[in-house]
Image 1 (cartoon, rainbow, N blue to C red):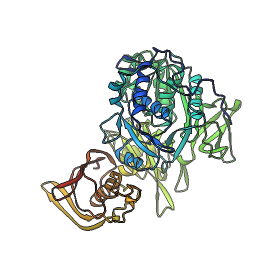
Image 2 (spheres, rainbow, N blue to C red):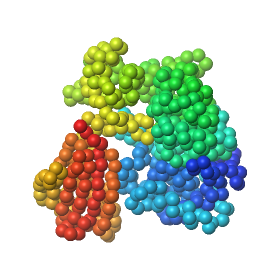
Image 3 (cartoon, rainbow, N blue to C red):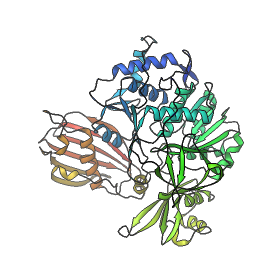
Amino acid sequence: MALQVREGLFQPLARHAPNAVVAWHDGKARRRDEFLRQVASLAGQLPEFPGDAEVLNLCTDRWSFAVSALATWKRGYSMALPPNTQEQTVFEFLARGAVRVMVHDGEREGGIDVRTTAAAAAHRSSAIAWAPIAPDRPIATLYTSGTTGPSRSCVKTAEQLFGEADLLGDLLGIVPSDRILATPPAQHIYGLLVGILVPLIRGASMICGPAFHAESLAASARQNGATVLVTVPAHLRALAHLGAHELGDVRLMVSSSAPLEQAIVDSLRRFRSRLVELLGSTETGGIATREPPETSWRPLPGLSVSSDSEGHLLVDSPFLPSDEPRPYVTSDLVRFQGGGTFAHLGRIDGVVKIAGKRVVVAELEERLRSIPGVADAALTAVQVGGGRSQELWGLVVANDLTTDQIRSQLLAWFDPVTLPRRLKIVARIPREAGGKVTRDAMLAAFGERATRPSDGSLFDIRSRASSVDGAAPSREVGLVVPKDLRYFSGHFVGYPILSGVAILNALVISETRSAWPELGMLRSLSRVKFRHPIGPGTALNLRLRRTTASVAFRLADGDKIFSSGVLDFEATP
């Protein structure tokens, strides 16, 4: 299928007047000329790379992200957008051959800090030469969320991303006077499309800065004059206690990533805003919209949708990657209705059989959240008995309820054998910034090991010794780095050194998991430093010192410290 592309669509900011506002920071206007000066400044800092190259964009502020995106495209490169910006994920991406440089706007080791371009850009001319981006040029590689399995990559062209953003702008009625406040991270396709590209190509403006909690979201909307709120059900649920006027003049709310529960829809009516839900995925792009209280989904213009004999939604779309089969078989179950609309019945990967009975996981989650006293809940299906059967495990945020009380409430709707076998009361659900919960995060909350196999045995381990210093357990590991370690391949030719990815993943994290397997999911890394290169044959001592859910590490040879830092894990009871 082909897109009907408007003339000038691939010329970024073509609809913004020279002095138009591109973004708002704390109520202050950031204008087109300033934006383009920073784009030119950053583009000049990006090194020259041969062949196809990717720039890893880790910016969390939308102004910084947009500056980085346009600078990347101006240089002829593509963006790599990871499923999250946790340090371990970042290290893995930096080890990929196509990724040549990292841009960020935070306290990170290495790469280019986009914030440093502002001072240099102030001395530049506002003029910037910009050739239109070729429609078939790959400009971004996005990754699926990993909620049901391993994350997979999806390459998107300029025609696909800009064309879909323009189409969504039409459907949502976005005009140049709109100020768009978005909470999903720009590294996700929903946040990229509606939070970044729609305002850039429709002549509207972005509202920048953190706004994830209900109070900060409302304050940002009022202070910056938001007219459009782009968010997810988890954030809309948090608005339930706000007053009718606390969002200011928001005329449109857009939600995606999961169907809205009826209770959320009912609570949002007091804001008197238009409410639009988007259905789509990283692989397919947008598929359909609906406006509650309607229950039927209406396909986006230009898409062909149907269903197979088992009820799977089939999509043929110009937003599909060229190498995907057409029609694309989604994991969504649908029933078609009159006028080409359809009812969404859930996802096939969200339907499990427990003791021979069919259970829709999303339905059970919604029932959990409807129990008085339950603030949030999430479920995952786990293979048991050698993979021959499944059971449900659940996390619940509920301060004044026990798991037995929660199960007794569920018995009003579900057969006892289908109830979650394991329920755990937690302070919060480990959701990603987009509101979803990965399978690994769910398992880690129950103290399960990560599914990724450890390759710590690749090192020549000479000794391991555990001790307790006061109340802090520690472990000492003596080792030698083998000369034929596979991590030296290509890193670098003629001067092999051990990369930070290998040091952390294959050695430090592996040995930490071996010492304390009960630790939860790795949450973050802090104060990580790589002070000296490590080459083949180096003898080292790794010291790990644990304090509750944090592990400090030091990799040294005598007084010479090669690397150090702190691993922070999710707390486990």
